[in-house]
Image 1 (cartoon, rainbow, N blue to C red):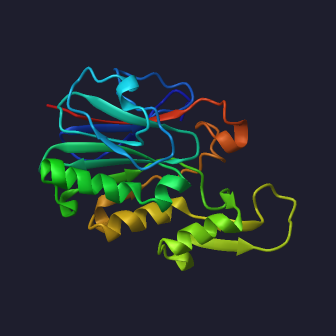
Image 2 (image 1 turned 180 degrees about the vertical axis):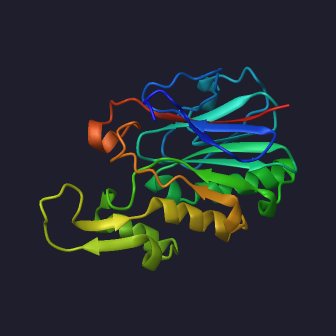
Length: 227
């Protein structure tokens, strides 16, 4: 696999979805927001929607055919949703802050309220993000997840003692599992959720802010309804 080949996702007919790698070129314009690690969701209802109109949003939803929406990440979790019954797609930026604020569940609510989507019909993919072995966090972050009812037994580990391996000791969270849990809790069937499992910190074909610094490039995860 080369650094310019996008990671393609198969969500069935009627949709295209992928995540770029370091040197990937976007094949067409992609509507993106000015993300802020929050939980606001915007409905894109015009193909000429500009980024300046999407300041402060971390998730986009659209039912427009041929209009690509996307999110940019460099360790945070990209989530792409597709409802083939109602013909609706969503792109979600869910770092630990978005995850603990349950942004994916808020997106599913918008898909239902605005387009009539049923979570049972939704297909999801969780793209490359920092993996549980690399995502070392402070105890206060673990507490945030505990307070919000996340299943710590499934998503949290603690490795005492310094081993000399970067990021190996201390508290760790599994954002892949945390976001899968949110989707399942909201009614998305487990069999309809695909998890890439790619650790962006370890896989250098993807950008990682923790490995390279916050000024590094960004992976763009894109979804588009096709005719």
